[in-house]
Amino acid sequence: MTTAAEPRPAELPLPGGKERATVRLHPLLAGRALAPAAALLRESGRLAWRRALGLGVGKDAWMPIPIQAFLVEHPGAGLVLIDSGLHPSVAVKPSENFGRVTLLAFRDLQMDAGQALPAQLRERGLDPSAVKTVVMTHLHVDHASGISEFPGATFLVSRAEWDAAADQGATHGYVTRQFDHAFDYRLLDFEGAVREGAGSARTGATASLVVSFSGFGRSFDVFGDGSVRVVYTPGHTLGHMSVVLRTARGEVLVAGDAMYLRRTLDDTHLPYRMEDEHVFRRSLREIRRYADETPDALIIPGHDWEAWQELDAVY
Ligand SMILES: [Zn+2]
Image 1 (cartoon, rainbow, N blue to C red):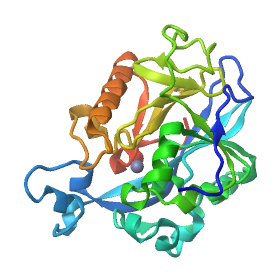
Image 2: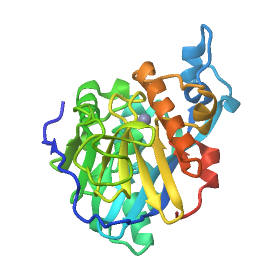
Image 3: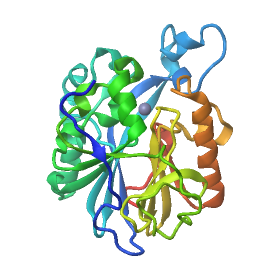
């Protein structure tokens, strides 16, 4: 249940698109935590569920995970964020913003005050209030925690994700108070009719329509210039989306939690928990098709510490 938020349908493209625009992409580390290895890569057997919850497992059965967000600089649309990082209070008292139930999934959650996204923006000489658009891959607690820090932004969320987050609550990884603000939430309806052939992938002429894009069955072109596309990758949550960016160095897919780890894409080793495994597998196949069609693209998984460490400061 939400009370303050009154989301409205998104009207795309958002202003600021520029023909052949490229964006600068800055991966940001919002925090880190430990997660049970058996949650990231599921195990079989009678005790798999216990191990996935980290019950009765040794210290070496926990893996470090990055909590990521991304700053995108668009030449016409200004500053864009992908996900919101962690609320500043998490540095002091995580249970206040996360809630006790959802905090159970994150052991040893670590965040410095300087890792809150407004602080990271200021550090780069940028004004946090200049962030016009925040693209939410999904509304899980470790992605939506910092939403309150951007009251002036337009938040793009898939309609299915909004409905799931508003209905499902803490046992599914959502904390309503993180996103229940009277902010400008705009819902993307990926489940609406796909116009066959309406958008040949890279023309950018059909921004307001759901179109297929390079392996992905459903996408929107956020600014109408092909520089920032959201692609529908549900399964981890019911309305998860990933983001394809065109940078001067090539395309980048911010996969979000459609894959926690690179390994899940490489060998289909699934995580323990998915809202919808069938749909998760379909999204993974679409990401694989995208990777095949765009072999030079950088694919950034949601919570892969090794992959995180290999990232450059800017693309
Ligand atoms: Zn998630």
